[in-house]
Image (cartoon, rainbow, N blue to C red; front, top):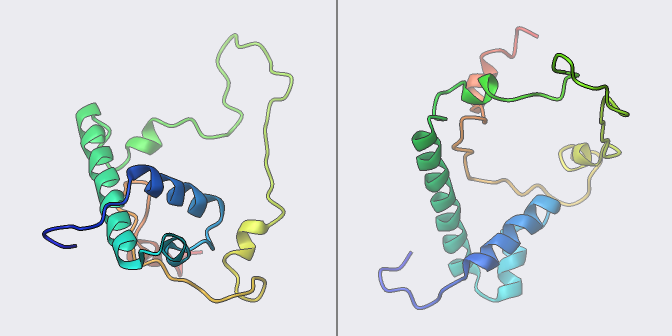
Length: 141
C-alpha cells in the first residue's frame, strides 16, 4: 500500500463486499473491483480491512480470556439435543437446514461450472485448522 494514499475505500464498502462474498463465494474481489473501477486499491484496502478485523477480534479474545486453543470447544453448545434439567420440552426439539447440496457444488469442479479462484489468505483463527495439521490424520480414517 502507498505511503501517501490518494484513494480511500469506506469500511461500509468493504462490509458490503464481505457480505456479498459470504452469500455468493463465486463473487470475487476482482468482480467487486471492476464494479468500483479501482482494482488495486480495493484489493489492498480489503486485505487491510481483514487484518484490522482479525487484530481487533484477537485483542477482544485476549481481553475476554477467549484466547486458549480449545476455548471454542469448551465454551460452545453444539447443536446436539442438549437439554437442561427441568427444561420444558420444545415443540420442535431439533432444527435441521439443508442446502440442496449447493455448498458441494461450489467445491466439486465436476459439478460446478467456471474456474477455480484460489484464495491466498489464511484463516488466522483458533477455529480454523491448518492444512498440514489436518493432513497428519489423512491415513487414520
